[in-house]
Image 1: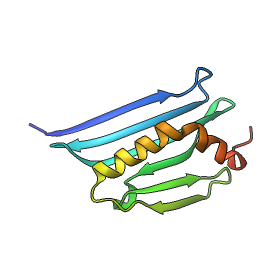
Image 2: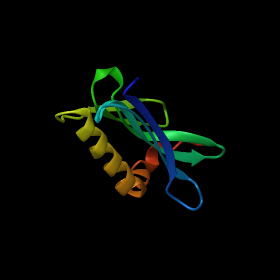
Image 3: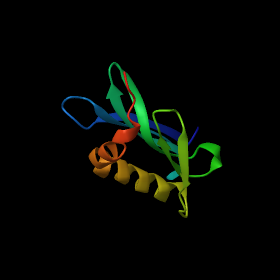
Image 4: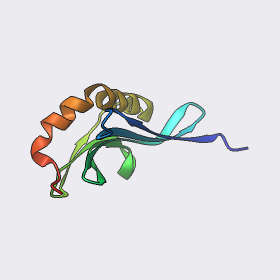
Amino acid sequence: MSTIKEIKFVYTFTEEETERLRVSVLKSKGQILKFVVQLEIKIGNFWKPIVRYDTAHGYSHKDIIRADGSIEKQPLIFEDFNIAFTFGFCKVKNGSHRMTQKNTEFLYKE
């Protein structure tokens, strides 16, 4: 019997449904093996990521995704993926509006 559990969900922040949090986590025995926490904004009919915390490339980091497609990577220095996930989740959930405002100059044009 596998002890690996996958959790995925999407949480919309605004009534207008213009900002959302997308989460994907892979866990085993209480330990996070990999994760993605992504803030997305709706531009026209498309959802565009602007901030992502994840474990791609084997380490936890924050990506700031700009309209031109360039990505600024910032490593997260935490003891384990559980702490890095909690940090990223709280940052996006509690500061999504500020992140969206801060990144206004990088917004995608229709």
